[in-house]
Image (cartoon, rainbow, N blue to C red; front, top):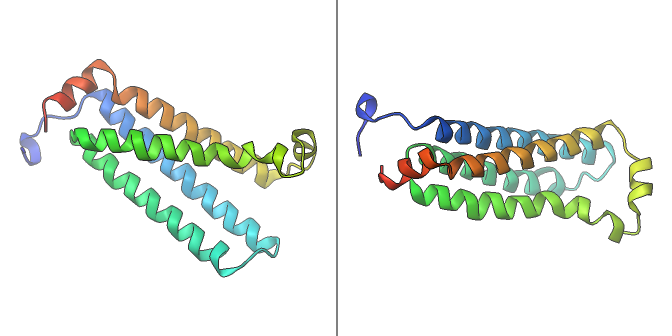
Length: 153
């Protein structure tokens, strides 16, 4: 592997994908902070809600950042890992909670009537995460990105 200034820069599509992965992680961290604040404010402040869950999410976000760095450097395995773990599993996690609204005894109409500012911010964060991940994955498979990964950095 080349080092320092000898290494050719990643194509724009790979750099943009990397920036979008960081955007998705930042939105996820923001969502985690909001969820902890809400849990504390509503009295749902058990130790697992305030530490365990958020710590697990932050560890996952850190792993995504580390793998995204490897992807930006040309690691094909990192591109595959981002698609498999972060994009597929992360998307399932993002949509699972809102998808449960109709099944948790609360219809969508009732849920929408009870929306507050934190709900809007949480929803916006999830939309941003999902959009960033979808665009990041699409960019990782553009022609210039494919050539970059095939070169086997």
